[in-house]
Length: 144
Image (cartoon, rainbow, N blue to C red; front, top):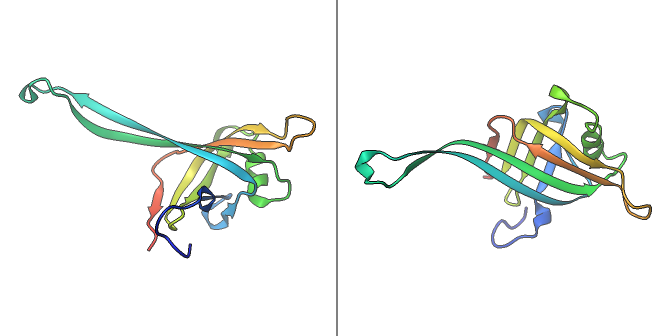
């Protein structure tokens, strides 16, 4: 991005998917995304804290819910839609989130859970909706 300061429009977030991390492609016609972070917190109450709880974050996961339109012929969109009837390890794909400042988060074995594909009102545009679920620790590359 040319200017990495100040506020930004959400469309500057971009997502890529591929069959391997060398073949990542943008996913066309996605409209909304909503990340959800699940943090595992261990709690304990030792005698020396006089009843005050101590905590330590010991686990993390992220789920990114994405909604958009089915775009037949787009490499990224086709790859996601092609996972609709897959199961097991077949739905594990490299998935990358590129932030507006250029920082990337690569989930090498993300679970792609397709929840809607191509169905709707007769006058509507076919949807493509899915969740990207972390599966192990991602690689974060901070923009330089």
